[in-house]
Length: 126
Image (cartoon, rainbow, N blue to C red):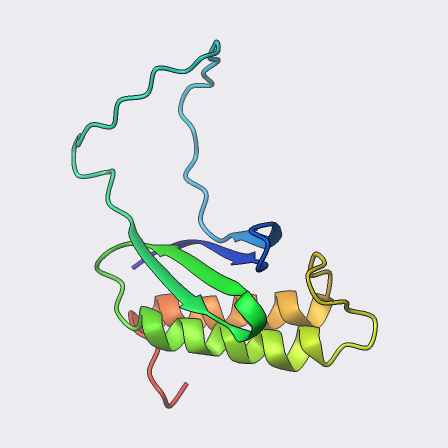
């Protein structure tokens, strides 16, 4: 299964962290003019994304974009919240509502995503 991206949004709605875990290779580079006239169509079952969100402490939101067949998204969101608490909030140089720039947070998030993808789910024993 695939986990595409992880986002952390502060209570004001600002993006404070983004990690693109799986970026499909673009076959052709496209350019657009504005305004964009967007129409979403279902084509070859490629537009399938599940959306998981967990409200954290003080209005921080954790968002995971994943394949709808990926199980254990709730457990993964709890694990991301735990990683945020352990490695961002306990970092003396991190200020709330500011972008997360912590190498330990990045490393632990990447390893949690790898475990979740390999297992197909992210159980309590992980």
